[in-house]
Figure 1 (cartoon, rainbow, N blue to C red):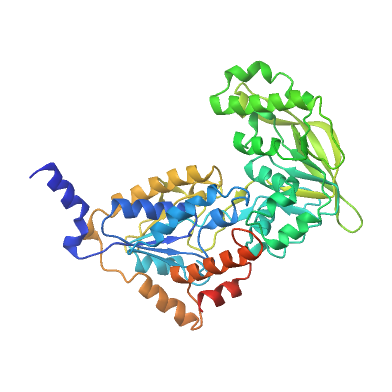
Figure 2: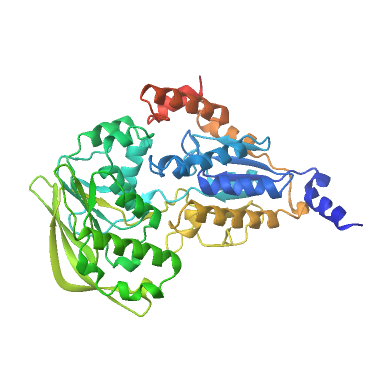
Length: 475
């Protein structure tokens, strides 16, 4: 038999057994869709159901990517092609742990892949952290991106000075949204309620606070370059934060070297900066950690007490942050906390490790022997921790999907499962009026948003009401 013949038999392995493996993916963000893409490519005979808590797909691509980054959202076109494959189904408005249990899914599928990400923000655990106008960056991003959870976010933009705690890409997204001229934002898919609030914003001075130094910033060169090039916005660095940095640039890896060189160039230019009336100011500062928040008698934030830090260690990019006894005070009336996300245990049978994500080996969830149930897998931030950009998520999802393919090779271990047909029975048994949004329903919502956006001269105006989404999807 030729090699080609062997390859052909391998690819069509399950058709001889008349058993089609059924895979359930929980979460329709990048990790979920990239995993589905790889499974479709590598398995000729597989049925994939993608379950999503919201009535709409795409997760962080829809609700996390900044409105002024439409090119990043183009990946939706790839995901749409996957969703339109005959062996792939999307089912929205189904919440794991609320509408359906993990155990029930594992009874009716051959493999269950969890990709629902990290949807809570990390907290600092310091004094007065619950004060008014201390806002999680995650909620602010959801607010201007139209997430139903954040549509009613209370934020006061009447003060002139704000601060962002954290120096990652999300922090720079927040900074750009606050400092970008409103006429530029009008052309994006930012929500109208956020646009109206930002148009009235009085914020002129924005601090970006990091606990370590310029060599440890988490943002990337693309995001920094965009910030430096914003119209009518001047970047002001503290030159003392860069002492000794130029002498070690040659020792850095290429990405870090290019980023540091851009910062140093901007530092040298900012020494002669001329701030004009109407200009906004972006002020990164380093070696500072929040010690406590200062408040007025109405429990509104008025400033931050900062601890001054120093760094120790030989590895320049990973030096340890050591707190000193020195303190500084920063006056501000608005603070954004952007120190990372954390995953949520939505079902009692999901086990987290001490790092806050699901313990796994190449995507296989490490658990006791449960041979009677579908194997359990995890991909994306739920399995890696909330780090990296969409490209990193894609690589991880492909790796986990490869693992699933390997485990599904032996069709003799598979039995005919009911898949979503059984899941639907469970959903309707507990709630006869439960609305399940399929891909056709999403397309109705999509068309509605695009048409609504045309009225405002925008790519789309996102619906923020789940009830309105369900009404349109069911029409």
